Length: 125
Image (cartoon, rainbow, N blue to C red; front, side, top):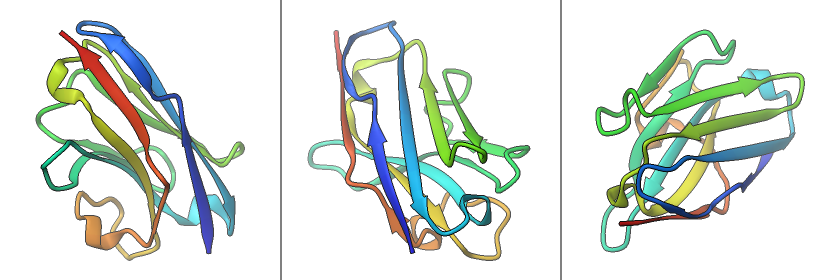
C-alpha cells in the first residue's frame, strides 16, 4: 500500500502559476504509474495528467496541454504538477493517484489503486 499527500494548492489569479506536489510513502514509488485528476463543484472527477514509472512518458488532457507539466522524482518519492497560464475553469480539488496496473500510462481513473486526499486550487478571474 502507498500513502499519498498532496500540497501546494491555493488561490491564484487567472494567468498565474501554481505548483502541486504529491509525496508518497509506503511501497516502492517507482513501481507506480502516477496521475493527477481534478474535480470541480458539481462535476465528475476528470483526468489531468499522467506520468510513466520512469518519468519519460507523459500524457495530458486536451484542456491542460501546453499549460501544465507533470514530472516525478523517484529518488524523492514525489510527483509534481506545474500549472501555468491558469484559467478560472482550472478551479477544482486536485488529486494525485498511484496505479499498479500493467499500462505504461493511463488516463482512466479505474486504473489507479491509491488516491490522495486532494488539495484545493482556486483561480480567480
